[in-house]
Length: 266
Image 1: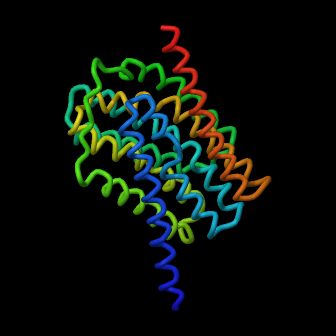
Image 2 (image 1 turned 60 degrees about the horizontal axis):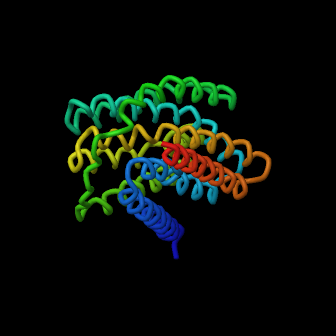
């Protein structure tokens, strides 16, 4: 087997595994309502497979530097969610989603111009979430969450988007370097697909509620990225990735438990 064919087969396999992962997560999200759905959506559904496959091709230093570049990009994602939540109350899908994605692209382009430290990335996230979480609060609830009727192309579309992201990140990582790779790995595929698929189905305010409820989950995702950077440097890629995933899961489980206790007391 030629090296080119071997690379192509491995790449297709990696893309298929990532697609299967996001399909499973998407089905659970759609059946869980806006709160649980948001917590699942903020798990590393697309970034996780991207970093896992990057770790198979690059050393721990590359993964650690990529995670450091990813950390401030997480702040851009919450601004994207806020932009969509505000616009979706009055405008259609293309204006709301298009503007939100444009905000992410502009902020990510600015962020990649700088060399970030761990402390700098954490500070940017802390400031961003301190601003955005209160602003998102009015959009977290809707009078009635419409039923989501899935169409035949929903799951294939999400699978194709994530598979394309993984394929692009893995293929381009060798010549764009860890900093650009870290930015690419955090492109918000899951949020983008939610906006494009759910907005026409259940309306802007209901879709905005899903994204608005994701704010605290995204904060935990940022902590997971920080843990990935530190743990990879000290323990290697495998343990670092496991620690990052465990951080995201533990954070979201804690949010679910706190929310459940509040509802029980109400």
